[in-house]
Amino acid sequence: MILKTQPLHPTFGVIVDNINLDYVTKEKLYPEIRNLFERHSAVLFTNQTFSEETHIRFANFFGSLENREEMATNSKVKFELPKVSNQTDEGSVYGEFDMETLDLKGNMLWHTDSTFLPVPALANIIAAKVIPSSGGQTELVSTRACLKSLPKNLYKKIYNKKLWHSLSHSRKKIHPDLAKKDHIARWVPQKWNSILRNPITGEDSIYLASHAFKIEGVTELDSKKIISEIIEFCTQEKYVYSHSWTVGDVLIWDERAILHRGRPWPYSEPRTLASVCVSLSDKDILALM
Image (cartoon, rainbow, N blue to C red; front, side, top):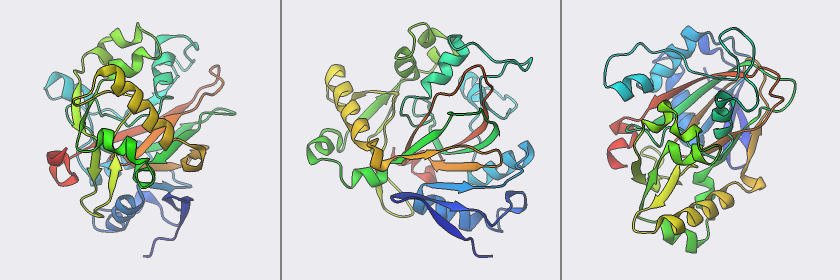
């Protein structure tokens, strides 16, 4: 079967709307999907039923599922499908200024998932489950596309350098108490290369996030200014794809080459996305980071 695609954005990404992910196997269609993922950095599938079982099975094709509890405790912990949601266990919603909602607002900073973990992410596979009446978009930019036109003076400031990343750093921007929460403060800063090369295409991308706070060999104050300048350049309107969710959408992006953020919505309304990150392995350049 030949996958029919159309552009997601002029600089990156594709839309696939002629397959059912329920029937994808490791041998059938996944190799074509993985090729699209490597070449285009983001792939959108529409009109999917995408049960939890299919979500987990499909994510496993990409690699090991990111299990933060297991990673934090260094012990065997059963994987549970993560939800990006403002809904309580009882079905109501958290208030706009509850810590749970403030944590979600941290996702509204331009970021790359899991850069603060000891093993960062290869991909995020997200499915829309509950959508509010307005807002709640997810916006993406390709740092592979942006790198091609990044001003040389900025490029030189990060070339051949490593960046330090911390979840507490980004959450502190939302609320100082948020950064002290156990599930946030437990992650010690991690250091990764600022430029990554895709092992399949040979193309470079910028690897940074709202979690990044220091450039190797540069003061923290100057580092933050440089990081902000680069994020500001990469997130110019011409580079941004804004996705308005519909139940049935499944969106995958390459964490090595995509910056993203969520957008606000009426917080009195529920919004739930099921989100599975897949951890990097050595064949996906982890050993070179």
